[in-house]
Length: 75
Image 1 (spheres, rainbow, N blue to C red):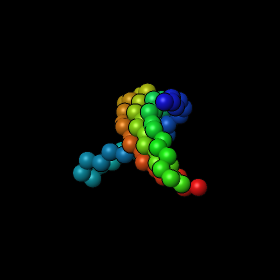
Image 2: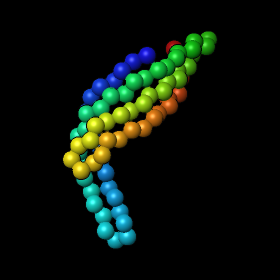
Image 3: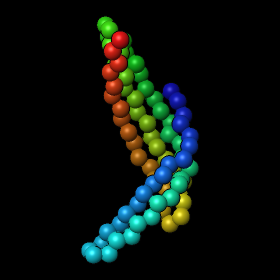
Image 4: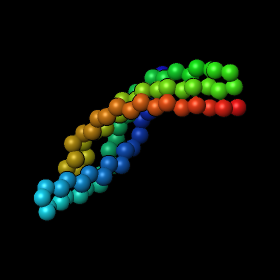
């Protein structure tokens, strides 16, 4: 279990037909995390899930998204 806090740089580009807007802002956010490490012989398999949530900044609304990660470590 873990909690990540810090700055997110979000680069937003919206295109409608031939018109485009572009904005880059720094958002404050956090990401609670839950994961597991499973030893398997000389390898360790990692699986974690993280939910990212940021505050609104500039003209960009708050952002939320979910990530899953899978990794293998060999020694």
